[in-house]
Amino acid sequence: MRILEQILAKRGIKTKKEVTKFVNPPKPETFTTDDFGLTKTGLKKAVDRIQEAINENAPIFIHGDYDVDGICSTAVLWETIYFNLSYQNVHPFIPLRINHGYGLTLKSIEEIQRQRTATLSCYDDTNHRNKNNKKSLLITLDCGITAFEEVNYANSLGFEVIILDHHEKDKKLPKAFAILHSIKVCSTALAWFLAQILQGHTESRSHLLKNPAVQRGYTPQRNTVWRDSTTPNELVCRN
Image (tube, rainbow, N blue to C red; front, side, top):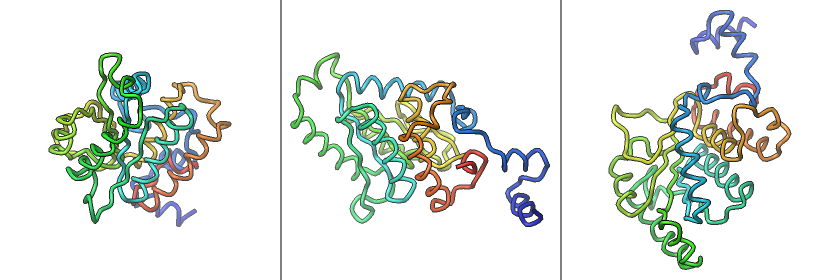
């Protein structure tokens, strides 16, 4: 116990109350936006826009990053939309750093634009032009929070951008449609929480522990905490 106390103390967890909270973390079904460092307004805006894209049959592109957190967060959100929500017009994209650079870049957006053109030709074009001709949706995971030029470029191409990121932000934010940012957890945890809300799970989520799709999200979160140098806290300690 002495060793554990020393380790926790180095992480700023010193009082008995803080230690108790850390080693006895809340259950996943009790997590709230406050626990994740998110705002209810921002989360609702992102959820509503994704649901709108699904209803309009608009293309959704999920742009991750070429590391464990970027790949795992992309997998969690894509699997939720594609399998759990039964929406096939959603497309994952992981950039190759040798070709596209780090994070959200002009080159990666250009590649997604090419994929969008090909995607539109594969689907009935009228499905994408009906109901007010809704824009395509670009969701960035583990990147984008400082990508000002890149987000503007995506906007100019007709994308609406939703950013999920846990990296340090500037005083100003990119002109994205919605931003879910927190330094309390990794991007995979943010994607997992968003995925639960998308599936209709609100503040009462006691049934989540029995959902295999939800349980599958725990492993990617554990991997990203250790491999992405994210600070462990009570949210990720339990699972």
